[in-house]
Image (cartoon, rainbow over the protein chains, first blue to last red):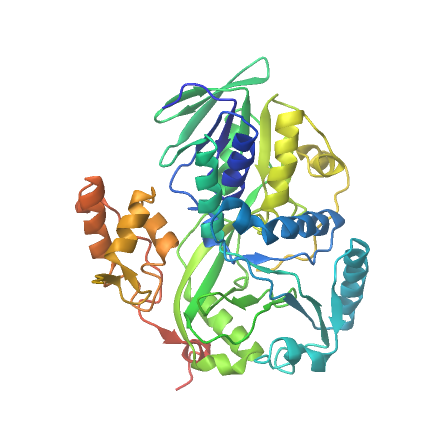
Amino acid sequence: MKSKADVVIIGGGVNGCSLAYHLAKKGFDVVLVEKKYLSSGATGACGAGIRQQWSTKENASLAIQSVKIFEQLSKELGQDIEFRQGGYLIAVHDEKEMKQAEKNVAMQRSLGLKVDILKPEEITDVVPILDVKGMSAIGATFCPTDGHANPFKTTFAYADAARKCGATIYTHTMVTDMKITKKIIRAVVTDKGSIKTSVVVNAAGIDSKSIAEMVNVKLPLTPFRKEIMATERLQPLFEAMVISFKDGIYFSQQKEGQIVGGIPIPEEKSGYKTMPTFTFLQHMAQTLTRYAPVLKHVNLLRHWTGFYDVTPDARPILGEVKEVKGFIQCNGFSGHGFMISPMVSNILTELIVKGKKSDVLENLSLERFKGKKIEKELSVVG
Amino acid sequence: MKRSIVCRCEDISEEDVIHAIEEGYTDIEELRKKLRIGMGPCQGRVCIQLVARILEKKTGKKVAHIPLPTVRPPLVPVSLGTLACEKDEK
C-alpha cells in the first residue's frame, strides 16, 4: 500500500470516484479507499434518476449544471454511462401541491430550465400507461431534459478514468482511524496500512458519520432504509421518470426494459437494518398498479435495500470543517447524491486544488446547522 | 464463432466474463453490476456458480471463498397484480 498521498478519499461511490478522477486529472496524487467494492453503498442501490426539478435554488442549480456535464460524460470518460433524457413527470395531487409546484417552476425557470405545468389530460401524452384518475392527479410538472443514467457504469467509468490519470484505488480496505495533530489531518489508518496525507475527503455515505467521529467531528446524518424493485424486461413503454411527493413513489423504465422504482414504507423508522420487506412489496405493487393498472400483468423480479444518508434539511454537507484542517465532507446527500455528483466533484476539486470558496460551499457547510435557520429541500421522493 | 453462454437471462458469454475480470472487475458483486449477471429472472441460479469458477481460474481465489451475491427477494418472479392483492383476497 502507498504510504503517502496528496489526497485520500474515503468511499468508492459515485462521488468518491468522480472526485478521484478530477483530482488525478489535475495532477494530484490521489488514493481512494473503499471498505467493500466500488458502488457497494448508496450508489449501487440507487434509482438512477437525474432530476433538475427541486424546491431549493442550490439543489436545482447544482442539478442543472450536473446535467450539462452528464450530457457529455460518456464521451469524456470514454465509456457509455447510458445517460438518457426522457424527462421527469411530477404528479400534482391537490391545490396546495399545485401552489408549491408553481413556485418551484418559477424558480427553476429563472435558472433557465425548461419546465412546464401539464393539465391532467396532457399527462398521458408523456406517459401513456398512466391512469390519471387512479393516481388522482390534478396536473403535473414536466421537465424534458431530466433523465437517468446507469449509476454502476458511471462509477466504474470514473474509477477507470481516475486510474488512467494515476489515481490509486484500494477496494476491500477499511479505514480504522485518522491521525490529527494540532487540529490538522496527518494520516489515514486502514486495515492494510497507513497513508500520510494533509487532505481527507469523507465520501463514505452512511458511514461518513462514524468516519467523522474518529476525529471528534459530529455530522447530523441519519440513515434511512429505502427499498427499490425491478420488474422483468419489457418493450419500451415510456421514457419519463414518474414521481409523486405525496405518495412518495418513483418509477421509470431503464435502458434494458425493466421498470425500476421505489416508495417509502409506511411508518418506517431510521436505522441500519438491511433486509427487504414484504410490506414494501405490497405497498409498492398497490401504488404502482393504481398509477399504471396495465402493469399488474408484469412480473416483479427482485427488490433490494439501500440507504439515504439524511441531513436535517435534506441537502448535502460539503467542504472543509472548521474543527479539523484538511478534513473535507462530501456526504449527507439525502437520496440525491448520484444526480448532482458531477457538480459536487467540480466544486470540491476547485476547493482542494485552488482553495476556492463559493456561495454553494458556504450554504452547504456543516456550519449551517449550528444555530442558524435552515432552508429545507421539500422535493424529496422515495 | 463459438460462444459459451454463462448467463442465459442477460446473454453474457464466458468471454465477456473473462474480459471484465481482465479489466479489473474481480469482485462477484462488481461483475454483477458490470455485466448484469444474476439480475435476470433466474436471479443467478444458472450463472453465479459458473462465474465463480471462472473467477477461481483467473484469480486463483477458491470458489469456497467467493461469497454469493446478496439474495434479492422474491426468489421467483411474482406479478405486480398478485403482490397488490389484499391478504384476504382469493
